[in-house]
Image (tube, rainbow, N blue to C red; front, top):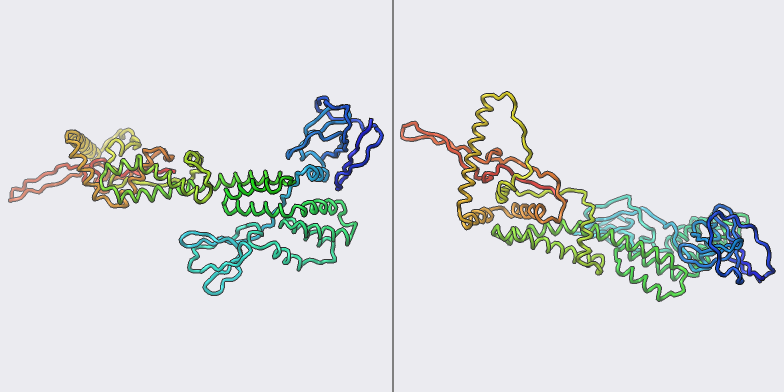
Length: 517
């Protein structure tokens, strides 16, 4: 029986040699349970497979994919699944190249930059080249941009961004070449590594080759292996640059364009060895898109809630209209406008049900405050005071003043109960007129807060803090009623006191505030 032997040496490409007479391979020592190979009698391309732990296996590669290989063992005809990560790195790289799974990812060159926030919105990220005159001169995207100082709201330092977001590849190479000792193999090696980090593999291969030529004894295996991979990647430089542009689209949050570009990549380069990198970039784009949508949905939801609540406070002059809008119109307008924001800024593929899913998965860390203010009484006493904790049992010993206070509280409770009965006896028309009369005199800010608080408590779109906060009415100190003293005239000296429902809180005694997120 003849065998076609493929021996893969360290730091060398796969070497195919002519068929030779059958030889006895080393004994196989695998300890895993193996299934018999179906084509054990057929001629095979046998390779010596080196594993990361230093062991060696002889056999054939039956199948391969971006995750690893299916390996047929020569010793017993079995087969085993091997991920790329278990193989010796140089042989792994050589086999990936052979089968078209070249990974072009590398540690990207990062630099310090600033984020310039502009008045009225907008941001410029880059490196400030000059602060003289009326403008900041900022290097960004390979160009110089003048930013008027009057438009600058704030500048954030300490930002780390990819160097290629600011400088061109040629600029970075020229800056580092000027500081490279061209007679030093190690200097060439380091410059080649830098070229890899800016995805300039043609120049990387040139400097790896220069390092090997200047000193063949300088890291021979590492240089040879690095040169081999750089040459492979240099052959695909056009495809690598294309994928780098896809990364740029992702960073600029142009996710639909980035995904479309990846689809076009498969059509433009059907035999590309970079499909593993394509899959990684697609996964990264989808994750970045979801995070960006999540952040934008949370931010814009709160923005539109405040904006539409204030618009409604100006538009709706009756209480019934305001309540109806807070329950139905406001939730729908928020959803519609958040969807429009996401579709315009991030992705046209997002649908209404996606918005609700992202909103449900928001981080929701900070609570926001909304108060019913002087309109708390519109909720009715039960809703207005819902959540007030019981003050507990009275003290065993009661002073005279405590007794007087308790008597007054009992008197106020009876009075308010009678007032409530009288209110219920009134017609709905009279009650609506009271509500509308108050609503028409309520401040715009007060109405906007009230609408926002009502939406938060009654619609169910937001998460409420378990306990609302209450503030006693400033007029009645929380009792719900005020005592008015009358002084008699005409020298009779007659007079007295009487209770009246508090004109500020209308008897509920508190201002209700809620927290939501």
